[in-house]
Amino acid sequence: MSEVENTSFEACLQKLMTSLEASLYEEATAQLANLHSAEIARLLEGIPPKARTQLWVNIDPGTQGDILKDLSEDVQSQLLNEMDVDSIVKATEGLDMDDLADIVPELPESALHNLLLTLDHKHRDHLKHVLSYPEDSAGGLMNIDIITVRDDVNVRTVIRYLRLLKKMPNDTDKVFVVDRDYKYLGSIHISTLLTNEADQNIN
Image: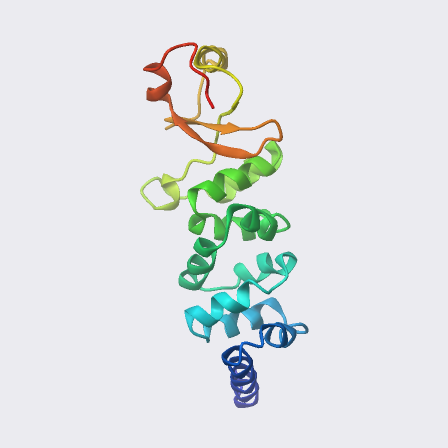
């Protein structure tokens, strides 16, 4: 980065911090309006965590995804862990699979499951492909193949469904519960299904 660019960045950062310290959050957000996502990411990395959080919640969800992919892992992880599941899904749903794959390892588990449910099989398969890490790496421990069941059925129905599948994804130890709108509600370990009464409702 040239000296001129660095001077410009420092000036932007100082102006941003002045607005945030005065609790002028709309003014601070407006300062980001014409900046590239990478520039916004750099500014977010340059301010304290508390100020970063205050600024982040005022940024349009439609642009948050592009900013997230340009953040360092530490800052990315901080912001993702402070967001609720719906906000994460809205922020990341417009990203291409390669950019999404960079963010997936930092997602909270519930957000990851909800996000996967928004993808069709084609996009889920592509995400699986770009997440093909060596088996002994952290990414290799991730399993994005999921089995979903409705919350209004009983244990007997779920077990029958699993048998009909004949083959389950490798390392599957639980099924994911969704409602009528396919919204993620939680997960149930297969061992729990096997040790509960057949008439017990999933919900």
